[in-house]
Image 1 (cartoon, helix red, strand yellow):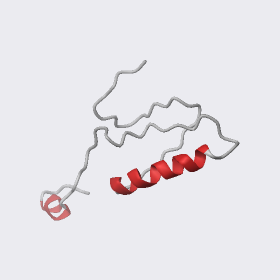
Image 2 (cartoon, one colour; image 1 turned 135 degrees about the horizontal axis):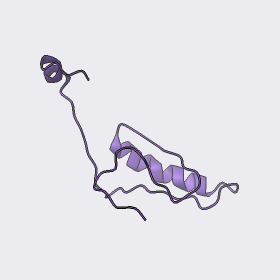
Image 3 (cartoon, helix red, strand yellow; image 1 turned 120 degrees about the vertical axis):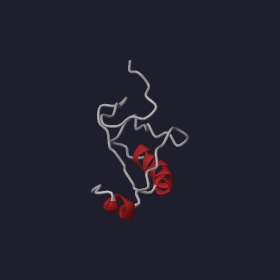
Image 4 (cartoon, one colour; image 1 turned 45 degrees about the vertical axis):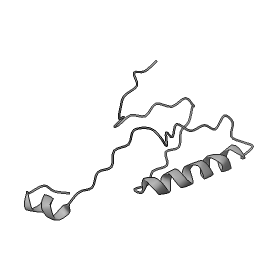
Length: 77
């Protein structure tokens, strides 16, 4: 059992023995391609119990950095 967090930063929990992490800087693109990759992996006969923990409707954080303002304030980006 594990406590459910609003936002999980760092370690990932998985319900499978092995895991593959798919990342993208564009969340909409990730939401498009992740299910396509999942279906393709599920059709591979050597793989069993292929699952996803993607939560398209789950909590998300979008961070936009104004690099000019950060630089003026001495914040390295």
